[in-house]
Figure 1: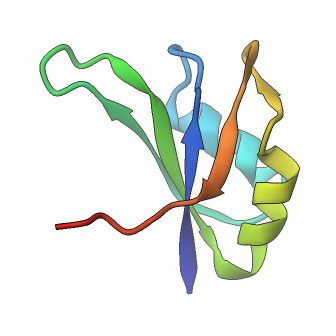
Figure 2: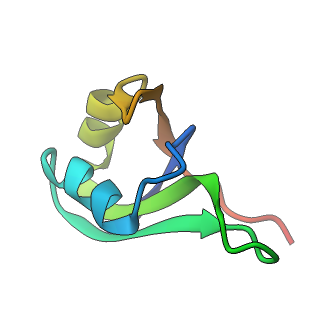
Length: 83
C-alpha cells in the first residue's frame, strides 16, 4: 500500500526529482509531483509525494517544518479530493 503526502511552501525552483530525492533519504518514494499553474506552467509552490505506507508517518515527522531551498516546508498526509 501507499500513502500520498502533501508538501507545501516549496521553493519555486524545486523539481519533481529534487522532491523525490529529499524524501528518499527517509524511506521508499513511489512518485513525486509538483503542481503547476494551468495557464503559465509555473510551479504553484506545493506538490505531492507518494510513499510506501510503512514510511509515511516517519517521513512526515522527519520532513515537516524543515528547511528546503531556504523555505520551511509543510508536510502532512494528503486529504482526498472532494467532488
